Length: 405
Image (cartoon, rainbow, N blue to C red; front, side):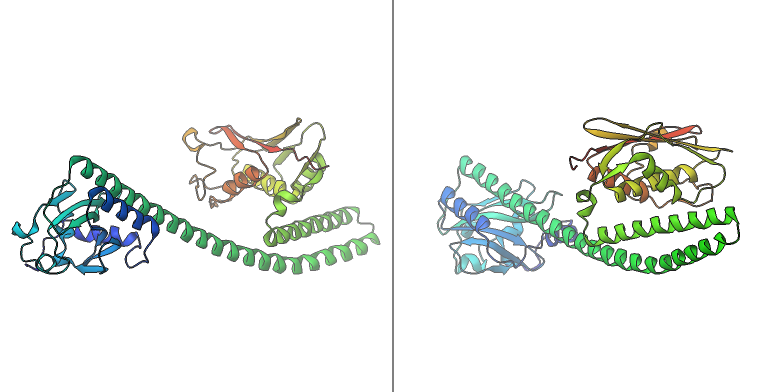
């Protein structure tokens, strides 16, 4: 037998494809055993194998009527089958075939005489091995038997593809779990690190407020009280974020009654506002039940973007709100630089930036609007955007009205 066996022209890519399934040398599995048994029954042969051909051997994922788990590649009938473009090789009597007459698998145990193999073809077109049937007497399969064998070979690949997909999903899930664990630790640490200086700022603002009360400096008193109020609101936000980092379910579970005008006023007070920014609130107040921390994050992001991406002498932002029995609809409109039509669909995708520097010559990360969309969907709503470059942008989003009262 010539050990300089012929190899597929794309052998390295074929081996890489086979390796991607992570199936070599795995334990027997009932699904593959059942397919081999069915092939043996349909074809009336004592031996049926699911084989995979690697660099040096053919290895049997399942085997009926054979004790060994692998044989050298240079003796493998299946190594010839994967070279056949038809995907089928049938040898009626190997003793009379010059390719196999001196093969030890023919001249000694298991004394192969008849062989028929169907190539196992990966979804990217690489022959990985075969589903084959073997007998110790000369024979030939009927067209119906060959057709059934082809169908069973497809089922072998379906099982392999399924296991590959499950493995990929498990790996992705493990990576996601690790990322979530890291982000939780990071958020918890960051929240604790922020709370300490916030406490100092709050105490300083309170002391300053009391000191100024004796001076008659009304403007200074107002500034100090505003500072103290903003610090307390920021402290509450940090506490809420800390709770969310420890228990993400609070985002949708902790629904509270929210007065929209008071909520929007508090949220706007938390944003550093240039002097040329004018924000208009809804004309009427409304009460809704939702997650305050989630809504704050949504509005802080949308309002900050409206301020950052504005090139007008006066930045005008209008917030709208309408409530019905099923949902609340908010709008955030601005007179900023706008968004091109071909970019409207992708601005909510993760890590997508529009290559536009803001008024402070800073570029975005592409995380903000992705997070906004995520939070809104968690609140049972959706978001869309309308825009005309150079004139305006309008973000319209809905949230489902909570039934909690």
